[in-house]
Length: 188
Image (cartoon, rainbow, N blue to C red; front, side, top):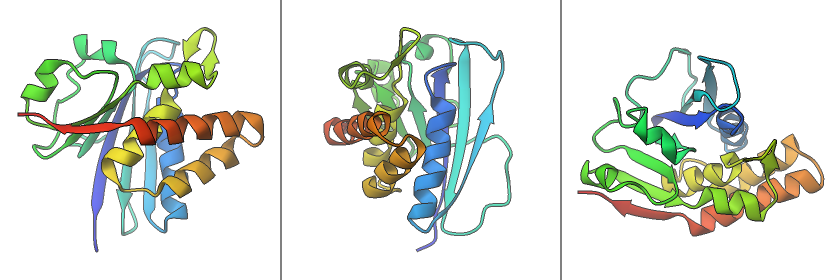
């Protein structure tokens, strides 16, 4: 079956949005798919809004341009909805993967929304750097559950390859916990 999926990741510098996009590529390749990660940096500082993109396909991908109309939007930091229109360009049948309880206005827009308390999972698994909860691994698990594009096995393998040993185990545990705790609902 032929497919082509575009993903936009919204986070803040230091939360790991770019790393998540890179791990999507590693997992997709393990699953026999084609994928690219495209980071976009504005103000390159910790805490500034950051965007990363993925394209995942059953066929080779030639374009590396920014994504204007994603199929999926992943929001690592819930406070971003106050300063960024995270639904901009999102396809009508699109999916929003959200850290925490999604604001009611997102549900009213009619998109499918998947959500998980990624911050709680990151803290529980001791994924903290410079006082910031690293929510990217839980959000990678939520993305995997919400979209079913990647196998959770390949995602966990990619995470453990990036961080061997105890750090990889904690990150993989966060991915799996979020995968199991993610709730998918339909707005409208």
